[in-house]
Image (cartoon, rainbow over all chains, first blue to last red; front, side):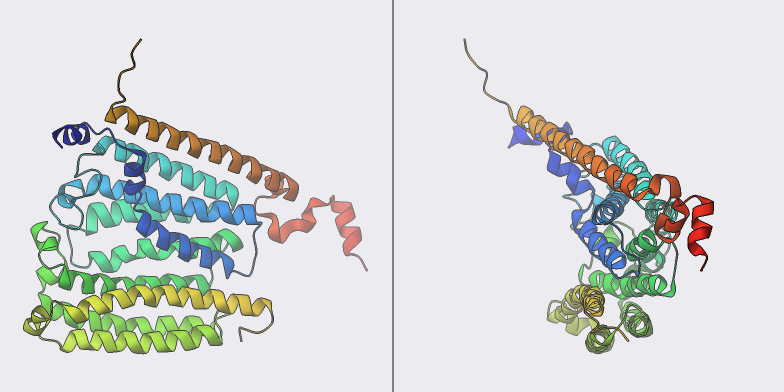
Length: 310
Length: 68
């Protein structure tokens, strides 16, 4: 035990520790949404180009994750959820994480530009900058709106996928962006409601700490309401269709029901049942996003057989 | 002749080196495949040439082809 600990402290990392730096769970969402953005676009790339596009978008997302871990190592060491990460646990040195983050940022941006087009590469560069600098270095520790504005970083991948295929922006790409952008705040506020002490201990100004839990509950409701028109509007564009619209209608009704329950709940009731509703809403919000993008894919596949779409 | 028992630190380094080696190998293969695709499509001359495929023809041929 002591021996292993001493190796951990020397930063003699295993390969898996470097993979952990790239936040593979976040990367899986990036891969999925970027892939959908690419596949539903009206222009189809060669399979090798598509593979490269998704790979380098994912790598860019991983690079920004490594830069985030490098910058946030001090607060990661305090929070229960993050103190097992490679840097706070001593398995990877901060300088290594910075070097990996910067190197992978450069590689992913240049390679995406070469594999698809310069606009896609530039958008990926902006996404990495937004997550690492605007969100991690600036917003996260300075404003309770950190999640709202920072959510843009996670919303870019489907737009980059679309731009990689078409070489231009469109209303469809903008609405896919808005779907994730508006989904992010209530998703993380539901998490903050039941991960009670973590953000406060780390002095991260989450809404629960700065404005209280009652205000946070109201925010979950109102942001969920604001999300609905964007989610439904996507169904009326060229990439929407009956499958998407039906799926979105059902999911939004359930999402509104969950957010309403969170808003109307008393803190003492929530504490008594171990934040059951908040945990349910958090899990459902993951399904919400996944199912929306699956429905887009389903409509795209049906359009291929002249069945879906409008 | 005796062999020293392998240390934990060596096992970690070996795993890391194999991982990096495999990744570099995969990257080379991918770049080769991408190059083949780009050269086949003529993208090196035309950037994202999906919408401009016709411009690969010399101007005279292109205009002749467009004439009724």
